[in-house]
Image 1: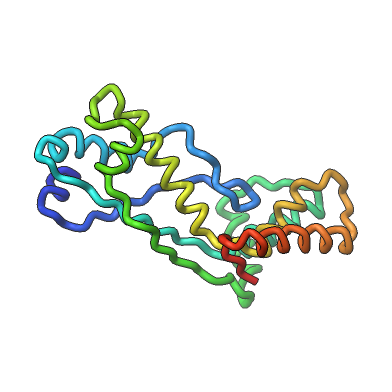
Image 2: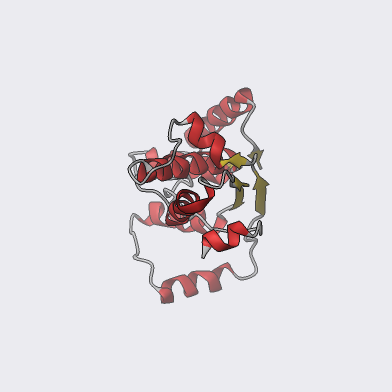
Length: 196
């Protein structure tokens, strides 16, 4: 079906689902995303032979994750980790009612030429033998693009520092100093968007 859609030069929207750590960082994929594998298979089956190319336009949709961070903070303070059931999530959403859910950020990346990607990574010509590895590398590339496009939110810095702190009680002054150091580092680095 993907091959038929692509052969008519139509726009095709595919969702790549990535897992995040509790701090908000992405987990590096160890297997290729199924949608990327389907694209590679469509390219291998006919588009490559016809000399056609596929252009991917990465779009990252991120949000402030206030809900998750708030619940993570409660877990750290109470040192109890609840398994999230549907009832628990509904209760948490009800408690969230009337409070800000944060902002949503949508970032468009640079278009990726499938042909150019395969040439640069020495997968051309694409074959059944190198399809899995090519799909995995494209998946990892897209996850990296998404992570770079994600704004660094102050909540994420605090959550990461709290997760790395071995003590149960953390004085505010030491947490504030650690957040300040991370913030200063990110500001010097320049390329990371900082959302306050």
